[in-house]
Image 1 (cartoon, one colour):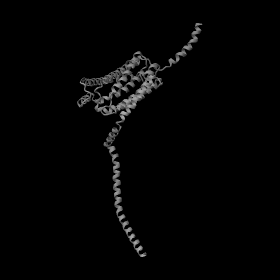
Image 2: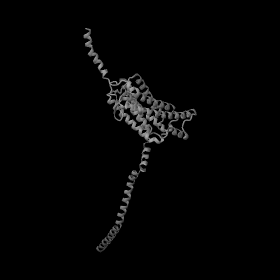
Image 3: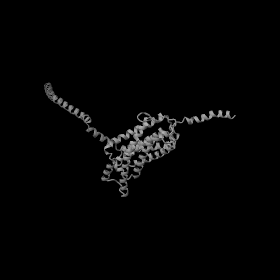
Image 4: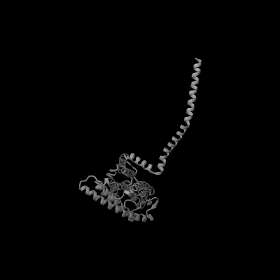
Length: 356
């Protein structure tokens, strides 16, 4: 009886275990870290933060360091907990890190505006913690977690301009790049510390705004003014690339993130992203006429646009010259016509007199 009961219960046990065994990736991470509502919400938040940087010339990016830093630090806290407890796969770990990098970059670019640095001590501190946390997480991932984290039946591949396996040569190339990035991040961290010291001095002296000397001092510390346009271009390129990389990595690893938007964990970041995007559109929308005038002025200075703008004027001059020539030719014709009409009128008048 015992043998038969064991044999009879084994198919049932297998059928109960099969759905769990077919689960790809971490179900907890799929709900908490990269569910549909979470991803779309973070995409919208990153888009809105990028648009905030096109606001008022002196106030753009104000408060963005705290907003972005708070989100990224909270995500990184969950990420380190999942990594320490080995609750997700390496590909899922990189998905979360890509989203965090996309959210943190708009806050970094606000350092281009020194007017908003004074009075944001908390934002600078949070930004520093987020930057160092991302660097440590990237190095830890490619140095150790690729080997120690369970694959959880994923394909263990990611998108880095192509489909690459995490256990291939890409791992060592990425580790070298992360090491170099850590060195540059330390330089960035030193700049943030120096800027924080200046902001702290203003806080102690109760100086609310930065004067011209403070602005010049902060610009010399950051030293990004000559890279302003390249940084803005990099910001949008990274935003677009992150969306493509995250979505393709999810698809290639056959992950099934939560798509139930009624779940509060999915609904809250989504609504937050919508609100941030709408508000950023209103803030940056006021600067659209200024950017259009500036773009038109820049186009008029270029050689090609100067030619294009000169074409209508040239056509007008040609038309005026031709019309002047036509008018010149018409003058003797008009005079002859007037003479003939005058003579005809005299003849008609004479005949009318004869009849009378």
